[in-house]
Length: 471
View: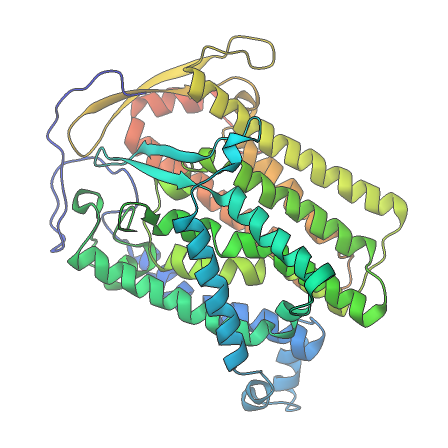
């Protein structure tokens, strides 16, 4: 979309924290007190939150209040709870090392072949969006292939070879948690050191002068090892999202082992979340143009979050249903399925409309009409002025982030499948609501700085963020 180029005098920032004159694009140059307090809170408490949820299921049948009441009434102490927590084991460490190594192998050493025979699928070598410094990275998009190979091997083992039990993930769930934490902290620390000492693209690094913010939000925009191993793409998609469906399958296998059958709620959770995961990998090339790749730097937020937060808290519904098998009535099950599918349709079609508009430069039809757009421009860190368009037709004319609305509908469906017995499985919809509203605000702050008055024209044309007439 860069049709014309003009030189400007951008501002660059160095490790000593001194700044020049460029407008903000990407994460913050400066850190206010509220951002710093939030960062320190997350660094301190996010690992505890994950542990608390998993411990509550393991020791208190998924009750979030029972551990607190036990401690408050003197029936248990923190030491008692900790002593009952399974430690890391050699078996878990071997399993996790094998898992991550296998995903690295699939990502790095096996070029995509799915795009050669799957109509409509875009894989193989693809270009990402232009970075703030004007760099266009190339990626080997092979996530769908990795997902397929991994799951084929899983089912071959489960039904033919029996090398390991399908319940192996559930049976080692807490020991694997410690392994995931080790990797999350290790890769986040390595990425920070790399950003200071040998960055992939020094022009795309950001230093705030605050250690905690740099560690949390990252310094490097696209840290890489060699030409193709991109930290951000690998950890966003593998090992966490590939594992998501395997984790759910292991939970279903455990439910079958314990109760002799798999409930319709467990099937719903597996199916709806599998649709989301498959959508992610089918559209991995599109993902290269989303906020995670185009805006976020790689730090603890992504490194630890993708290793620990995602696989452990996004799968709480399946874990809950192991301890509380819910059999939904047929009308309830169908209603939840419909909610999830409608949410997915909105999510996918909204993203498809933007992708279609972008690929054709607006020479397409959306809802049977020629799409309308706001012409805008921005300046990258290399001083070049670029031109772009912001879509205001289709779902993008309904709300500025209507894809998030569909995402939230799907998230609610996962939780409703668990019934109303406990709060724990509803953490996901609460978290996703906070996350996506925050992402709306963060993305719009970035776009306001990036596009200036053009962004004001866009928000006047599409006044609502998520819900027309409400927000």
